[in-house]
Length: 433
Image (cartoon, rainbow, N blue to C red):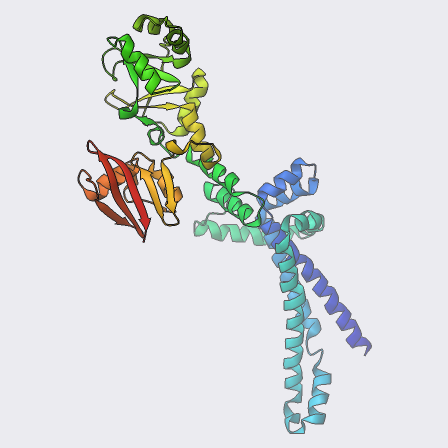
């Protein structure tokens, strides 16, 4: 009996040690570098040690395997036939017809019992606990694990270097890639939305921030045919009419055509003169005109355009194509509106996408394809690098100049041309099938 009790205590002790190795393996391997760095910045020295162990993961895994396998072997030796005498006696007494196999049955039950103890209490339960909060557990067990690595350093050196040799032979990459990608960040943000930590508007803002580096500035510009500008030969009355009919904050000033831009004027500098009836036409415009105009190519991203605005401390730019022709203008407000999305107030008359019901939308032809993708939940349009607006998609899909009532079906949506003005698509009706 004393021998049985001592063997049980040894088994329990081995299970405790095995629990330590199982928790250490999962917690140190699963602990996220970003969280550990935050803990280190707050003064947690153990977090720093965990990061160091992760950098040399070979030593750590070698130590864990040495410990785990040694415990398994000792557990098998100690637990061998631990229940055999009891099971054997039980079988002989109640199942006499199995008497000849009683010892074998006892050995099988002993094996199942000891193996089940180690699987449940020394492996499954501690590993699930470690996965629940790996960083917290990792910083608590790092000191004894470091001590264990130090004690078995000679064995670890042999096993680890042999493993490294094999990896080199088969040209297997050993370095762990901890670089954070867009997908990683979005995965974290998605998890935050699901738990309620991040609101939908905050999620939209984060999503828009990353789009600044991938969207061309031409996707948010005011297009060429919508630009209101003044020319040198323009009459006083025409200038006054334009300012009254189009209450923009800035107007381009050109020599003869839009492609000969020489500067821009602020409407606030002209309105007082007009109201006081002291406006003398182009001479007054020349006096208040700003000739330091920011001109950018249409190959810039929105993020690069924002950098340009910051460099020259201006909020207005003219966009040229590769032939030197003006294709549009962009303002700092356009960038902010793209960044903030639905959180920015927008007048109903200026909305480019208007929901007409649960499965119907009225969309301006100039609306950016990126904005359409967001609203409709479409991941990608065909060959979308070939065009920038939903009107461009229609021309691409129809392979012709669109006419009223023409339709395109794509991903359970019907895109119908509602209004065309001089070969230009003004509006589309999008309906979900």
